[in-house]
Amino acid sequence: MNTMMLVSLAVAMAIAVSANPSDRLAELEGLQLENEAVSGVEKRSVSLSQYRTNQLKAHNDKRAIHNAPPLVLDATLNNEAQAYAEYLLSNNKFIHCSDIRDQNIQGIGCDASTSEAGENLAKSGGQVDNYDATAPWYNEVNEYDFCDQGFSEQTGHFTQVVWKGTTKVGFGRAIGAGGTYVVARYLPGGNSGKYYLNVGDAPASLNRAACPPTAPPSTTRIAECQRLAGIFNMNLYYDENTDKPSAHDKPACSLVCDPGNIVFSFNQIEGQLDCEKRDGSTGMCVSNVCT
Image (cartoon, rainbow, N blue to C red; front, side, top):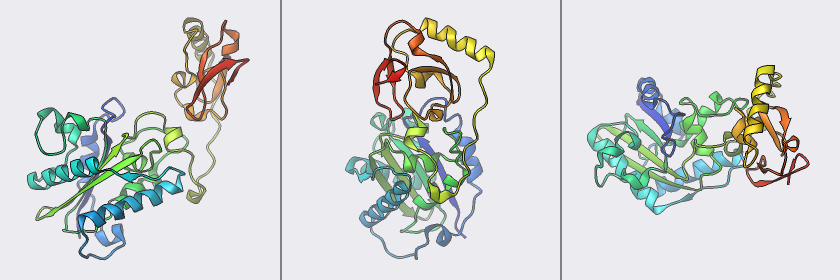
């Protein structure tokens, strides 16, 4: 039985949402799976070039389920991912580049230029040249809450795999006595920004129940909303004033204090305000409509 270890982080997300990835890593170090069950393929000789092509296809097949555009392989990301995979193998380590970047180790694909990239890691205890890391990364979809979207260490691999804002990917694979290490690098890095736009609704194939309606806002929150509207009377994007912008179903020029509840309209404030639509584009507030 081979030991598989996974960890995910959008390296660009060096902010509060990825509080302590080492905790998640510690949990996953004890996870054991049969590699054949994970990959669904036989062990055979697969070149690095073919391996990258296989993993790209696996990624794009999963992305298609979520209406995410296909990724393309990037030579620079391939080279950086490969250098880092070889570093992990040769040093018997399983840590993110973001954890050691400040050490400024040269030649391992982990210098300052990589800070904007997203990263997924996987390890198998066996020497498996066609190790399908994409499958277990994506399978975290079963734990993802589409009704309360956001970053989670339990689902960070999945969200990076399907992140719609990511356009390029590179893969590294290193095989030796210490097992098989796989590194995936992504640009632009995922897990940073609007999850409802970049992950989207649950696909019908998951057979998820409809999300429940949100509770009405409290009087205190309404008062705070009105106070904010009086202070910030220009360049106020409504997405920046709600905990769950995914609750919006239509473009509107409104300040939202509780998830999904419009409690104060911009047309009650003097002047026309910049606004943001659900699709991420910007417009101008005219009669409470973002046009």
